[in-house]
Length: 137
Image (cartoon, rainbow, N blue to C red):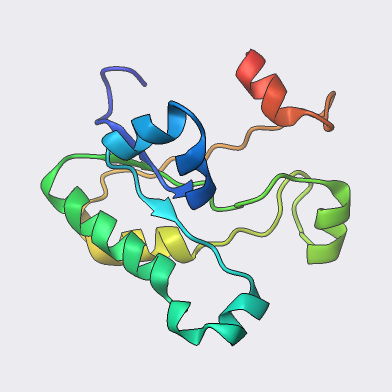
């Protein structure tokens, strides 16, 4: 995709901000960091509800001004057979998507989206370490 699309902006988990070098680089590149809260936490702290939606909205407002390629991993979790069974996923290699983030991006940016690309990475030979496989090429 090099030289064919604008700069990538990834929606990242807040915890990645603390990874040495990577977190600082993503922060410097103005990538949005999302805080996810468990249902139990939100019951104890209802004021936190909707914070990730607000972060998404603010980020998308910035993207209106600067051409951007938005990268969003809507599945939001590493795939395991146990998780697939628990969520009753209809897909063979995916969990059901958590589409609130991309739905907000589409809502805020609307017609500014030129294209949408759906990509699935699957490492069936090594399901125990798929992230390592991806980094290893």
